[in-house]
Amino acid sequence: MPTELQSDPALSPDDGDDVLIPDPQVCKRYSVTAMTLWRWDHNPTLGFPPPVRINRRKYRSNKRLRQWDRSLAAKS
Image (cartoon, rainbow, N blue to C red; front, side, top):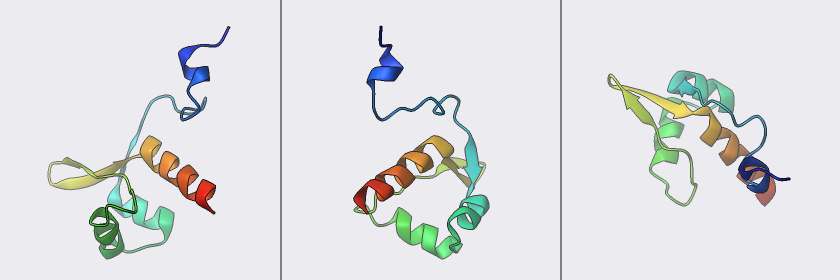
């Protein structure tokens, strides 16, 4: 008997709890500069996950970053 999580193809078993990743680590993850993240944020056609601001610092949802990675892989 399928559950709701199993029936949704956008979710995978590793999509449990979400973690916020600080932008400097996101830069390292993609080997880009902070300016590149700024450009990605201002390019709506790219679909890059928006930042979450906490005390004037920017973080990204790890779950949304993984979904963005999968969407790019599917396009190639």
